Image 1 (cartoon, rainbow, N blue to C red):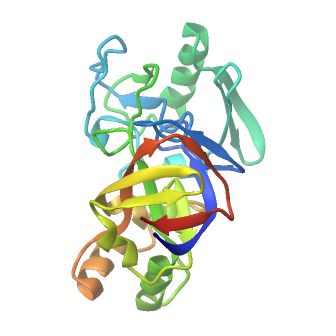
Image 2 (image 1 turned 180 degrees about the horizontal axis):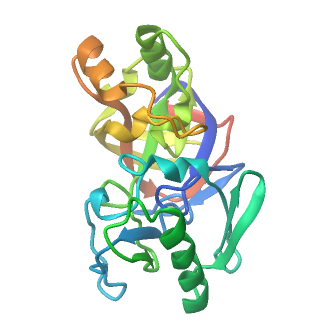
Length: 254
C-alpha cells in the first residue's frame, strides 16, 4: 500500500442535472453511491422509467446539463429528512417540494414544465426508486476527480476551469496529472472505504457549461482530445468495503 494523496472535497447530486451539494462526511456501503446521489431525475417527455423495475437509461432521456444548460441557473438544496427539494432563482426560493410524495413530485413537475418549457419534448416527470441511482454510469459507482488533471487542462485552455464542471463525488489532491487513469482494475482506499477502480470517465459536452453562469463557454472534451489524446478526466470506482470518508482523509493505492 502506498499513500497517494488526500480528499479535498466530497459532493453529491440528489437530482440529476441540478446543483452539487458539498458534504462534510459520508458513510458508504458496498455496491452503493454517495447517500442520495442522483436519487431523482426528471424525465423529459416520455414516461418509461418503472420504479418497480428500475433500469438504467441514457442521460439523453432526462433533463441534463449537456443539452439543457438553463438548469445551471437554478440553485437547489436537498433535505434528507422528507427528501425535500428546495430551488432558488435569483436568490429567492421558488420551489419547496417533498419528492417522496405524489403531491411534492407534482408540484416540482409543474415548476419544470414552466421553467424548462422551451426545452421539453413533453410533460416532465420526477422519477425515483429506492436504492437506484440515475448516474451516467450503468451501475452504482463513485466518481473521483484528480485535481492535478484539472490544472493540467487549465494550462491548455489558458483560463481557470471550475472542477465542479465534472460533477464528481470525490475530489483528490496530491497526485500527478492523469495518475489515477493507471488505477483501473486496482483497489484503493479513501478514508475508511475500500473501492475498486473500474473505468476512466469519458467526458461529454456537459463539461462545456459553466456551473455558475450556465454559459456554454469551453470546449473541454475537444481540448482533452487535442492535447492529451483522450477525452477522459477522472475515474469510476465500485465500493467494496463499508466505511466513512471526509475531506482531509488519505487516498491510498493498495
